[in-house]
Image (cartoon, rainbow, N blue to C red; front, side):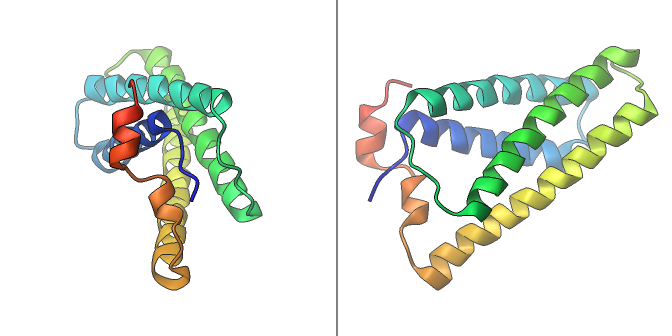
Length: 148
């Protein structure tokens, strides 16, 4: 079984936790905290893409999986850009309704894609009973080799 690069695994799970927290808690947390988390997610996304390009990444063969990953990265980047534009448009306390609606729509689309992603993981785990989850899960070998 091929595994993802240990750095990719760590970045994936840290990003996943922060993105889900951001999507779930966005209306409950202060705008400045929301923006700070967005900046951290932007940095992690850049690091993930850089690691993906530099490492011998596992080839995704399924068209559906390729599409879902492309959409997830695209939506995350679009959310980062729209969030930065929204923060810059009228300061931190208030925002432009048009930009806010775009940002919210992108967040809703990302939530939908993440739910599809999770359903696909469950399908592989429960129905196909293959080892796809272990490729992106932590292992002693993965954590001991990593310099991250």
